[in-house]
Image (cartoon, rainbow, N blue to C red; front, side, top):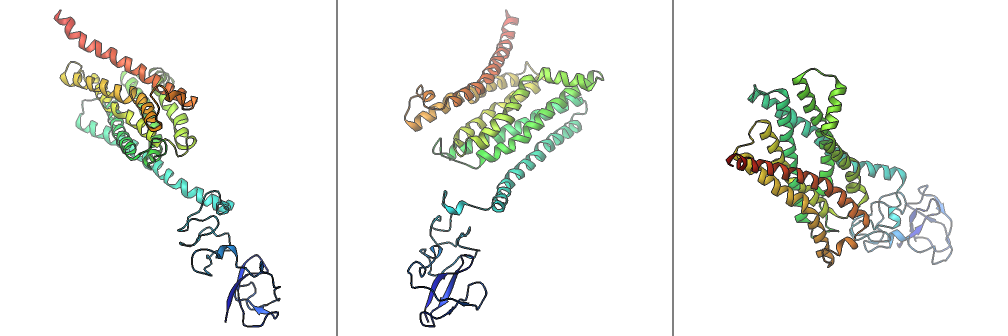
Length: 371
């Protein structure tokens, strides 16, 4: 008995027809709709007697995917054909990409699940760590005020975030062999981990201001909020730019390019622990100790290398990849990239100038006293 594939008459489904009867007589189809219904005789035409396209692969003859119709979204491994790669993977731009609306929604929900999980973990991690730090400080230092405990707790959480960001940046940079097309999953996942931290840090700064004013006198909410905006104007702007500009750019607009440069931006947080330690030592009246001076030198060094020289390093790395000199790179990248880098480095230069002024006052004071 011979077995031959033929397209069915209804709904475009193929059928396995048994050639047990002579040509011109009705044949039974075991896979056509209707079970054992009789099908009319087929004309002697090569096009109608040819096997369907989905069954003409490099796999086993007659192996049909288990799906409704030949537009299968999950072709078995080892079967090749139009729109499919060896191993059952889809080929971009083919008819296999034409999913239904329900399929697109289902796959979109799956792709958003890791992002929502990362956001949830971050939203629990940073506020929980802040609450744990403030509780421990109140137990360990009963003489400290609520404002001092909240301020030190905020600085500890900022230092933990800086260590995590710096470690993620080093991993991404070391993993990307190509500055444009190299990729690592941390370049995207840690950005989602960063979003709740920025929201938390803004609220933590407001909470510190509320505790500070409450320790002095009982004031209205509006007064506290105005003082918070006036004293933290630059930091609020910094957080807003990250949330509403940098996050959309890194997670959507740039596509799959530039994970190396995202890792470089992460490394800019290396100076944050030293800045936080300096602020804590100032509140504890430890400005004239050796620890404060050593920390000041480390703050200037890390800030200069990781926040100022970072941008020339990214330009130099791109030039090395493309065979360009450092001064030719700005002419070979989009103008928007140069503008964005200028906006990013501007506040860093301002903060670095403030750090230099503080360092000058710190090291000039002993000399003035000796004179």
